[in-house]
Length: 264
Image (cartoon, rainbow, N blue to C red; front, side):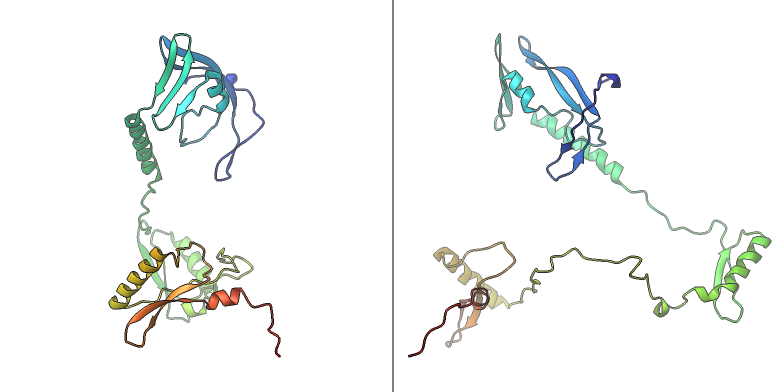
């Protein structure tokens, strides 16, 4: 906007996003803002918080104090903002076409910036030369453009410290656990999810029909929690047909009997 940073005054509080991220504003600035078109136009001084971000989702966000100052009424279904003016009811219309164009333009910029440069395979500039270690049948490659002094020093260093290198994968013990560890952040009390048992085509058709029938009857319902209480299972009938039954094994484990029956 071409405004001087001297117009920005300090602001103490921070902004907190929906996901919990905290953003500290650069400061605040008071600017005039106008809504509508003449003659049904209204202007107020509004206080804005200035945030330094690379890819903002919005250029300007109008808060409730500013909307209340305009006495604005917002209709999200009609994409309109209406507010009273001395010349009548002013309005601001949303333009979905312009919004889509801006969104597509922003996404194209992000895609271009997020493209990582291709890392080509790194090879020595002037090739390599091989030499064989003493008392060993192993060969080592070093740069071919090294001077004779550098080559002698490097060969002597590798020759004196060849026991440091692990030449076989079986002897490589890896990184010690006190240095770094790999850990999966999982819930220790969560029940492991078993792989779904595969069924034949005939059984899958019977299961689908029976589940639909039980759902329509209101006998079972779909749940979204991982701890299963009572599942329906497919069991054979004496006549060679199949039927769906409710397995109460997990339910009985979750709700044990706490009373005893007295014997007479």
